[in-house]
Each structure stands twice: as structure tokens, then as C-alpha cells.
Amino acid sequence: MPVRPHILKAITRAALLGVLALWAAGHAQAETVVALPGAECKEVRATLELYVPIAPAFRQLQMPFPENAEKIEGTLCRLVAVGTGVHVENERVRTLKDMQRYVKGALLEAGWQETEQTERFKGRSKHGRDVFALTRNNAICVTTIQVGMVPGIDAPRAAMEDGTVYLGSLKPHQREWWIAVDCFHF
Image (tube, rainbow, N blue to C red; front, top):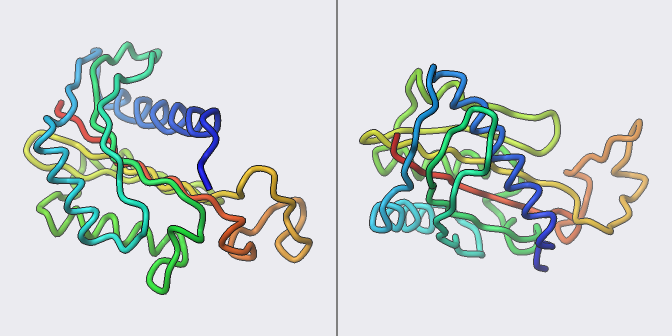
């Protein structure tokens, strides 16, 4: 089931703005960043596709940073996979934590590492969102994994409590996944 363009655009903008705010907090002056060159980005993509057990492949895009208050400019290489739980979930990926473990493990296997600098990108929302970053050779890859309810689905009462939808109580076709790995040189 394809993700509606306005939803993808809103999620993309929110994720990038969050990344930019965290990244800019550690830099006194505005800087220009550059997307990983195509070959390097392709290498990251191949690593993800080898080690992350999901059905949809990662699309590779180069895109500009959105306008932001910190005046950070430049481009990034985005690797993105989107799909419902029917496409993304399997016997090895059932939860957000599973997905985070596979994506992070794939990058660590390829020589990316956590540092004090990447720690500031860490973030996890109460429901359905996880952000982390790894670095290698003056480059950073910031991963945002988002799982939520497919728009237009009425949540069953069993999945609701105090106005909160519990994603684990939804059926796979009722969950929507968005995995983005944004890589750039600084």
C-alpha cells in the first residue's frame, strides 16, 4: 500500500527538522554539509539491503536540506524504505526495537560507529519513533524509524487505551513503516 505523498512529505520534514535541530545545537556557526557521493551512498544501501530483513528495497535519493532556523545548507543522501507491516514485518522484524537492531547492526558491521558526537542525535518517542546516528570517515548517517497507524484505519477497541493507540495491538496491514537513513559529510 503506497504512502500518501503529503504524509511522506510531513514525516520527512519533521524528521529532517529534528535532525537539523540536534545537529545544529553542537555547531556554533551555520555550516554547509554535502550528501555522501553516489558510490558511498550505494555502499550504505547495499549494506542495509544485505543485513536488514525487510521486503521493500531502499530507494536512494539525493535531496537538499529543508530550510531551517540554523541556516544549515547542503544536501544529503537519503535511503528510504516505506511499507505496511504486511511488507516490512516478518518472523525477525516484529517491533520497532527489532528494526532498530537490524539497521544499527548493519551499519556497525560496515564500520560505522557510535561516538560522543552521534549520541546527540539519539531520540525515541513514546510511541513509534526511533532516531540514532553513526559516523565513519567524516560522514554521519542519521536513521529515523517511524511506525504508525495507516491513515484511514479505525483502530479496534482492543488497540486503544485512554485515547492512545497501541501499535502492537494492530494487525500488520494496519501499521505503516517508514525507515530513512540520511547520510552526509560535514
